[in-house]
Amino acid sequence: MRTRRGVAVAAAETRFLSLPFPPIPRGPPILPRGAANWRQELRVIYQCFVWCGTPETRKSKAKSCICHVCGTHLNRLHSCLSCVFFGCFTEKHIHEHAETKQHNLAVDLYYGGIYCFMCKDYVYDRDIEQIAKEEQGEALKLQASTSTEVSHQQYSVPGLGEKYPTWETTKPELELLGHNPRRRRIASSFTIGLRGLINLGNTCFMNCIVQALTHTPILRDFFLSDRHRCEMPSPELCLVCEMSSLFRELYSGNPSPHVPYKLLHLVWIHARHLAGYRQQDAHEFLIAALDVLHRHCKGDDAGKAASNPNHCNCIIDQIFTGGLQSDVTCQACHGVSTTIDPCWDISLDLPGSCTSFWPMSPGRESSVNGESHIPGITTLTDCLRRFTRPEHLGSSAKIKCGSCQSYQESTKQLTMNKLPVVACFHFKRFEHSAKQRRKITTYISFPLELDMTPFMASSKESRMNGQLQLPTNSGNDENKYSLFAVVNHQGTLESGHYTSFIRHHKDQWFKCDDAVITKASIKDVLDSEGYLLFYHKQVLEHESEKVKEVNTQAY
Image 1 (spheres, rainbow, N blue to C red):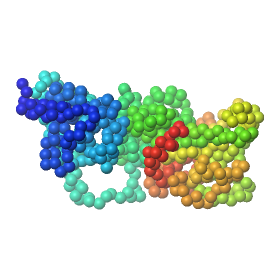
Image 2 (cartoon, helix red, strand yellow):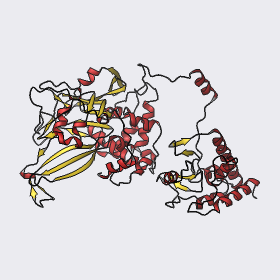
Image 3 (cartoon, rainbow, N blue to C red):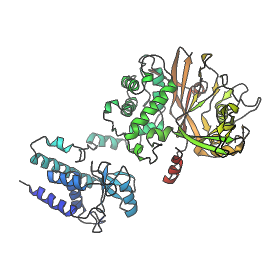
């Protein structure tokens, strides 16, 4: 027996579904501007396409609610609120429709939220929220009256409308907001985010990297805003889900050290070469962790958005991936072959290693990147100069020239084609050769602020025979970085311990030694030996879609 509401819903459904799909009909819009009956029209949309209470409406929704562009229904389908159009949110089909038709509002057919394309975010309206709740409740009642099974289980099936609890302010919360109208300022004693990590048996290599990652500003904002959507068959094996939990734990305000046993377990599962309680390399763990996070992030919307199959747009690549350009120049015809490869870090040779080092000229003084050059002390800039100098490959490493069509001697030069948001520099302190295994303890001076402009491919013209003309002030703020984390290694190659310095806010630095966190001075940071340096861009430029497309073609 059909209820009065069920008859009304069926009639409304018949009226909407009788419209031609696709193309988009040219009839009157569902929600015309200024329409007096917009509430009733919105109720019909929720009844027919979002909160489907009867078996008939659920069947009709399954048949009719498909993307008008690609014909699928699995990519976060949204319905336009100005005309009859369904489009994928993940594949940007609804975005294209909104831009073309200037229809700026759409409803999520899974959760019922209203998305504004002008705000580029989901928006809240009290009246619309009330309508959504009422229709949601009525749908549940209809399900209960038309089924003898557990209606809530039917209701929670993906694609039929899932109950998504929304946050509502309680009376005590409103009173607190009334008594505290001003925003809370961060005091010098602010300790949220400062939490030690228990060493589970030679796991200092993991703890120091976790501290650096959890104090990476954009990565912190991503995880604390719950942006990850896990699509793994077994979410308990997802490293990104565990990192989300870890961020919440470290920023919970709990002062007691956290035990990262689950993170260690997942690392052993996904990076088996790091399994066991023997000492491991912090740099090796960083690369392995970024690789696993990158693979597990591909289920996120951002990870699916990249059109180039060789380049991912997940949060890990957005933050850590740069473009390393390699130019090979033929010595016969001077033809240049260029390749650009993605990189997560830059590994730098040190003086005293088996490889020949290219020091600065004796007695030369430099104030580049705030480094006052002291004779006998190597700087980070020196290491970057050596990294980007032209290198003669020699007669034993001839490469076939595409222009000469013969094997010729050549020179190779590395430069940065695209800078990452977070630049990680790795000093090659652990040397493994046929003759010996040792740790290089050479002190490397590094600055609080770093300008990468001289090492960009666009600055290549300023290099002549390996002599780099370093400007005192490039004036390009987009290439300037600030230091926010330093990982150090104390001890020998056989027995050692990792610690880290992290910048908490402004110029407040802390030393993280597993479970113990102590305040540190800037001098403590800059005087440390340095194994891994983490720099964050000072200016985050907004790239247009066209620029992004050009940058990713090389990858």
